[in-house]
Amino acid sequence: MPGAEEKKRMRRRNRAFLSGTVTADPQYSHTAHGELFFLFRIAVIRRSGTTDEVNVIISGRRLSSSETKIRPGARVKVSGQIRTCNERTDRRTHLRVFLFCLQIRPDGGTPDENSVFLDGFVCRPPVRRISPLGREICDLLLAVNRAYGKSDYIPCIAWGNDARYASSFSVGDRVHLHGRFQSRQYGKKNSRGECEIHVSYEVSAAAVEKDTFR
Image (cartoon, rainbow, N blue to C red; front, side, top):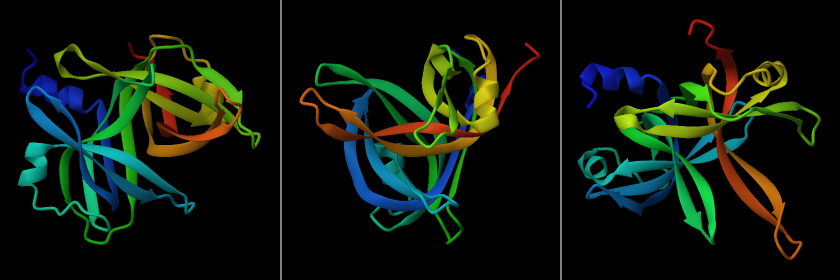
């Protein structure tokens, strides 16, 4: 079992800081190891004016002990980790991506913040492609280790020069990434040929670097 120092070291591999506006009341999400967990959403405005509305999971214990009022319209600061889990719906497995809250407090009117720092390993070959608007993109899946032998498999996306650089990575490479936790809508045709709008969640890289000192 990892000690306190090991837990701190592993926590530094996955850090996320968000400040924004709560858009929905907390709703029951799931129960794990006898503890209740709840989900709420935060809207974070980018410098471009686009809004990311992302999911936050908070434990019932933290929710009940917090002096911060989590309700629509409330301004909050949340720090935690990007976490993932597989969720099975409609006979399909869906990767659920969310911010796991470790600390929450009121936001005193500062600008919206959305910063994510990841230290993980490439766990499938990068996919380089061109967006409908002609931008170079590279999709990465990073495995970020946490305590007790578990890992989070976090979808990430790099752009432009970073996309070309990331496309050269190999499975097993260690990568340091700084970016933001974002939501993105996309269209997908169903079995009837109709276009359905879906929302994906990922970390958009502002800087990405391969660790060459392994």
